[in-house]
Length: 218
Image 1 (tube, rainbow, N blue to C red):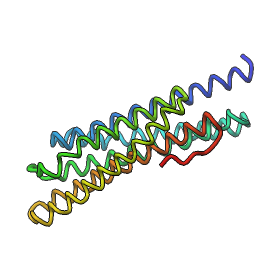
Image 2 (image 1 turned 30 degrees about the vertical axis):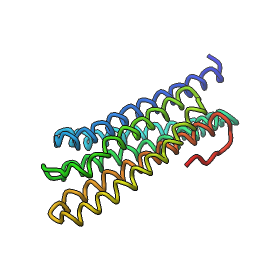
Image 3 (image 1 turned 90 degrees about the vertical axis):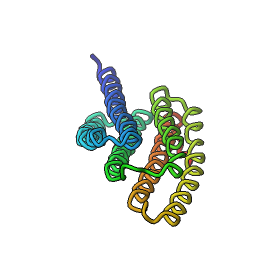
Image 4 (image 1 turned 90 degrees about the horizontal axis):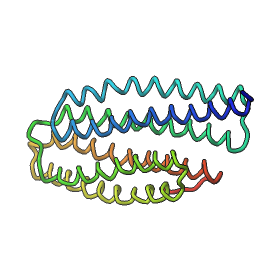
């Protein structure tokens, strides 16, 4: 097998490894929100345990990226593939951390969560999860337009976050006995907002990978 062919195979394996890690992160985000909505501490613990696997995988793939740079001395688009891979890995790892924070908050929320401030959280979670999915699909297919469309959804997430933040603060002021619970809901919505930002970062990485130009999409 020629050196070029071997390198192409290694780059394809790198992409598959990144997608394998991305699948674990997507599952963690979904499970973290499920643990909140169902008030199931076992699901939350599963998310927390899974994070060790995500962290180990991140370092393994990152070391492989460094090895490819050192041994293959890639140029032009090949280098963009590896550099973009490293950046996506970092964002995925942080997404996993945000999912853990949500799971921990879910474990700490009281059994009787207030319903009114909660009503927008499922909608926010749905949009964020769609952003993550679309960002990874854009990466798989090198779809710049899908990456840009996904990043535009971040404005909607920010709008919901601002509404939820004010709703939750007002609710605590009117119902001081709920403060211990609602504080953890503030953590949840903040982490969802950060997940959307991380998805946007991935969208920007996709644009750079395909076009070779950095584009601010957030």
